[in-house]
Image 1 (cartoon, helix red, strand yellow):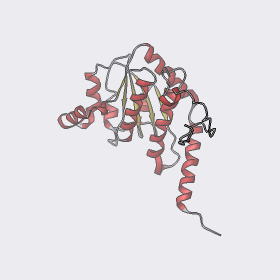
Image 2 (cartoon, helix red, strand yellow):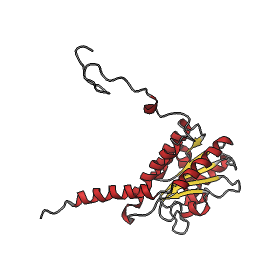
Image 3 (tube, one colour):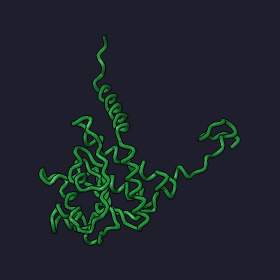
Image 4 (cartoon, helix red, strand yellow):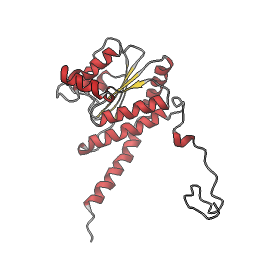
Length: 223
């Protein structure tokens, strides 16, 4: 009997987990998050997307989509490298988001959207800037897509989706992947989407009259 390639087994299980994770996400929680964002836009609130590491990259992606697709005024503090590094150097890493939001005069109309694997953990000193971002008496809407037990984001948040832990060794990979999958479910939701994506807005071209292909890249002589 031929032994299975362990690399194949890993990829197979990875994709099985992704499929099962997708089926485990609460449709109702996602729908309520969309409704909260619709309300934020209606009251002309701003959305501050925060995260560190891969979460910072996802926050930056989210800002683009919320602004371009949903017409929501959105910002990611980590996109401003000069201010981020100045605050880290001068005031310390732990308060970078707290101070950024204070200067931005965050208020009750606004929202904070957290992209984090652990959601912030003061006890173990992990993603402390996320925990401190909630240090405001202005009561902004708090949203999040996080992993593990949800951390401080889950404890203080209004609408927080926690990605279940299917594999302790792949918590980061699955959580950060699903942050983007769910982000796209949110921004392309009919309630929120105002502007179609570029590729979705391009009218389908007629098939090539010479070869019949929908997307013909050939240089036919007759062309």
